[in-house]
Image 1 (cartoon, rainbow, N blue to C red):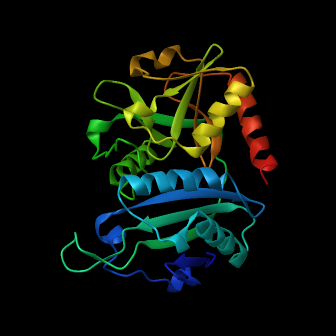
Image 2 (image 1 turned 180 degrees about the vertical axis):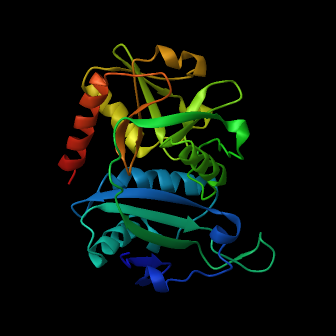
Length: 280
């Protein structure tokens, strides 16, 4: 396994030798946010949108980065980690924590901490991928309003494990009202007729960067877009479906006793792949 060079709050080092402070609030308490940022041919995909979401989230949880850690400085760190490694394409995980704990957990010393790791893109699985639907009440899901990309993903990871054991690629959640929300680590879309349908962010769904890209492209190719409540009972009426994230782009999906020809999904996927290449 490749020993990549990571950024550990001011220092660079290989993953096998990297250490983090044991009193860091992010690791002690999950007190921080993260962004997963894609790069292809050593160029970042929509870093401005990721940093915009990160800064909005940091404002919500009252973490203040110093001027020396502005968007420009963080962007420089992101490009530097790519330069220090040999990967042509991959994913960066940018984490910002509240900093070191000094005494009781609510007491902090120093300034927020920044960590960046790097890894290759996963191989695209056989398509379509299988999804499985789980009630959120089955897991300790934390749905923040307004939505933030918290470091706490324990319920999501439990559902991922259960889905994997059930031979599904990704779990999809529905809430106590029976409305579809999102996947464990991805967004979900449906197509009915000429309309792209996806859960409303008012449900606490994270406004993903790839989600935003897909909605924009759908409008460009004259698809209607509805961000709305989707009852789980309505899924059999959908004509197409797919999941999305920064890491995977767009993957058509299916579930038990439901099938599709993915005509418009295939068109959207081609547009997304082209968008990634054009942005390079």
